[in-house]
Image (cartoon, rainbow, N blue to C red; front, top):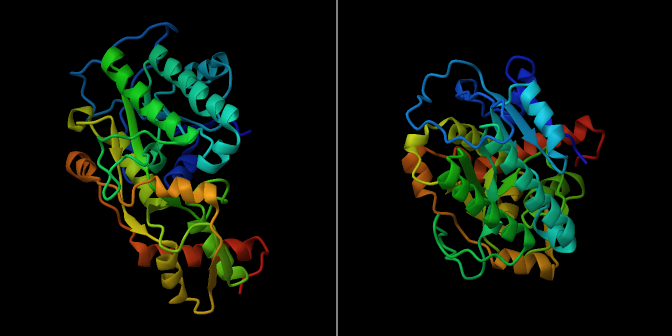
Length: 335
């Protein structure tokens, strides 16, 4: 179980740069808000307060697998002058279905701890959502920001709960809650571990090691995807945006949409020997079939200028280079 990562521009610039890896733009100008000395205070934000000219640098607490008692996190928040919470804690789709009770505890109870701390200490809160927040009755091509969701996984249900609770607390108490629905995120530093889109990372490792990949989804299963650098940059830019520019609390962000066969074909332009076989996993395929084919991110582009930089071709080139370096540095075989 991982601990919290405290990110402070005055004492830990390196971790912040790692968080914003190659996509760091204007994180240093994130506005600061003070920490309340009253642990039960639920004050509204002052809507007239300027968020364009911050007086001090922000201090950000990133929580992962957060099931700590509130008193522990409260001590960290107060002692370090935390102004933002970034809450990534969640069990992913396939793992959550195999561990519903644990997923409920991490994804929902842990989130409520963070909501309470944010309200009581006048913190600003970013919580990511997911493609999994949609369900089989949702529009799929494309899925808009506002529509019927009704997911059929505990992961998706918990994310919809978080979206709605955050919006409720924003309207009820003025909490500066912000949420992005991430597509499948592809990163060289993330070990595949229970996500329905994990094949899109594993295929690069397999292509560079054995030259063979067994995919658990059908070859024509199209899903929204995004390079980790675009994901980080979107998060930073969204957190920087003045509240007056936001028409929503939860936004879709999109970059590309592809199938297993399409990414395999792009990899073969570099590694022609790659062989992909398909052995459908019924659980993951059912989950994927309930998700959108594409995201409509019109509102994010209009409200705060979101625009991706990675398409499929650039993503494949970058991932092959990055995975090759990673495997070489770790002493793993590379073909």
